[in-house]
Image (cartoon, rainbow, N blue to C red; front, side, top):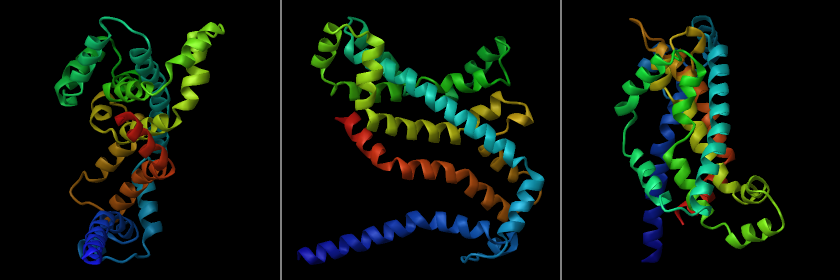
Length: 268
């Protein structure tokens, strides 16, 4: 009976794995086939990879989009991790009567969809003359309630006795944070970095609204432009989607262990 249950479980997992991996396989095959082959439903790799790449380079500013996306994602990730980790550490370590109330207000902000605050944000940045600037693009992503909550939960496992001992030794609060808290929370930083980088890289709606200069184009915006017009080159489109997907896939594969440990630690 146990072997039957195990066999059934493996069969279900194999089917689920196939269904999960098939879109990626189809995208890779599509990137190497012509538009006609994709429309006909060809499910095997082709020989049109270089042709699709040349068409993509000729019709779209791929290099500029890649540079802008990497710059935005890396800088936003670094600053967001610094701000949110300090905020989460402070919410847990330092005690104040209004701390929990403020944290509850921050958590309520997680319930608001971005489309609800999109127009007020645009009006605010427009009144500050910041439309089409990197500051307006990055500011809404630099401090998020989810990351603050993650670092606050992780800080609960940080021994407070070590902090008291470090204070008695004369260490400043900033030095305690950077030399003691930060190295211990590597898995939490790995999970937070994965989430933040993927969100910053895949962000499409806000950059499309706030950035009106073609030189500020990002990869999601470039992929969306490939679908415009009366005819769509599906081979070029698949290649653009594949190139747009690779950085986040590589980041996740490299940090998947830290991501799993960080999420588990945050839940605890």
